[in-house]
Image 1 (tube, one colour):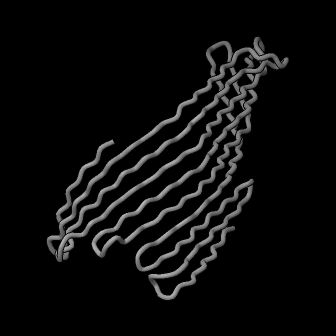
Image 2 (image 1 turned 90 degrees about the vertical axis):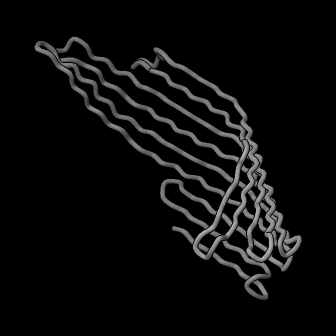
Image 3 (image 1 turned 135 degrees about the horizontal axis):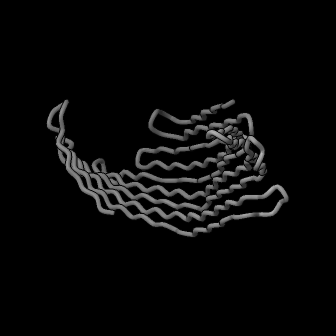
Length: 231
């Protein structure tokens, strides 16, 4: 189930407030929504928005395996349940300013947080025929990854002369915090853990990019483009 609410209040097509709201909800703990609002005037525009989502995906697995030779057959049967989930939110905002009729400068900011998690529990039955081995055990697995993020963009556009050739400069900065936890363990039928492993990773990351593009219209159907970027 989803819905959209569009709110517009303006003097003409270029000026005033406008906004849009989206919402959705589904089975098995799935929901989300977002909104964006914008104000435009002759010389500048402002925008602000936010979003949230939470999705869960449950599932099951089943496998029956048989290997055999001339004297004995070995069976490994398994049945398990698993769940994958994602949650996240962010807020964003930006502005564009018409410095002159040929110069436009703008910026945008975004900040948010996200989390993903997956778990599984699988039960195994291992036996042979003729009966020489019969063993029950379980596998328990968990993985979680979470962290906040931030991004910013700054751009400048200048249009030259009557043939409308233009240059566009852009600078971008991104930062992400990404923490990850994983666990795997094998559990005997008496509840004892026969083996297992845990791993924790903590690692923020940053990215900076500079970009410069030039466009020269040659005709209604063709144009010349050149540019470069550095990260």
